[in-house]
Length: 305
Length: 311
Image (cartoon, rainbow over all chains, first blue to last red; front, top):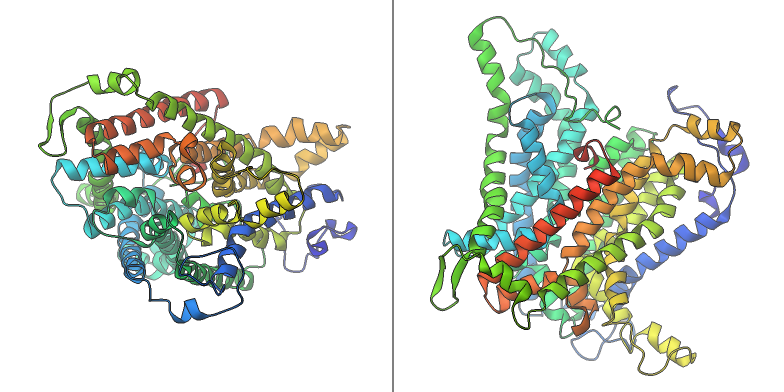
């Protein structure tokens, strides 16, 4: 904890790797109050995570989670696929999330290019639609989508879940990729053009390689949004059961411990990705993210649904 | 704010097109081709459904015989004035939970954002932000249900409070409005912290030095410079948190009880349990319009130049 508090001598960090244009540091004062508030709040937000991980190892006598601690066991992990329906729901969620993120990146990237690099009729309207797509409450989007599928007599199920997930994922992809494109500037593309590259070559040899981290971030965000969505999916799922739908249904009667195991596994994978990303960032640039990069990388701009 | 984000609001002028009218036409059509597929998807699967929600609300019928469009606007009056209809109560309750949790996320989230922006070294900022976001790595339904588990009558909190004699045997946390508002706040805290942090990071340190030099005390520096300069961040956060929590049915379902039934649950139940498609679609349309009006008025009074910059 003390490591994060600024020490008196820190006002001017060693300028070894810092570029010359860093804005002056705001004045700092040593008051522990804020630090205490920060760590207390973070501590509270960790309670559900700790509870989940802990109780995925509880040797519960029944196949429902219970509060009494009966000792440590890995039984539920060894019998992860025992609960009928749960594994299938998880696989369905994975399939939808993979497909939805691939399709939304494929659709969203060119759209982000258009919005970031060209001024065209309908561009502002398109931006507004994307904004409304992100801001609209899930319950309205879900209900409206079901209304639509009922009107056109399309039976709800795997396909309709996928269609709707792409529809909300694509907005996040556009926001992330567009921020990345704006942050990149167009100097290198212009240089490629000056050196005689045609637009297609410029795109495949210059823009695309620079864009890869942005596309990865966008894809991961879309994947996360899709695999975690309950509200919208509850409307358009029909007989199909996804992981969040299964958990929600089971929550009413008590969760099987395997749900916590799956939750813990998702958490660990997500954490590893975050850490790997953090380490890569640190290696590539010693500076922290700029606000624009942060907006781009930020899963929360995301979690708006 | 527009100056710092080179987003769509101020795109660089296109590179001069090579001479020749045909090439020019070709070049001009590029953005349309690029956005064609994505725009079509958004129009067919997002925009048209929003409108079809309105149309379904004007149908009459029942689940057995099907629904036909009769332009029955009466459904909107019936929702709120029909005998025994409680949808008005549910709507007001949802708005109240949304407002309360929004205020709480500001009160709790602002110090967090401020701490990360101004009180820690550069290299610690990203890790601490990740810490704020850590909850998002746990599935939304699971993390909400873990609170229900943790706060249950036999759970550690209530057992401890009871053993210490602080609360009586019948005391409950779950099922109360506080539990739902708390769950809403917990689940959307990061939506408030991040935009405020971004706004605080953009503040030029020299402005704060200037305030110091002009003999502003600590309180004045905060209330006269920092807070006004972070207004855009608060605005974005309010937008995200309020909209999310007013519509959310999950926190009320998992943490609440019969006395905390909210509008989102009413929409879900009307659609999925009772199959009153027209009523459900009307409720959803009402929610969209109410939120739209509130947000429009808020945007006008809180005044932000360009909402899209904040996303």
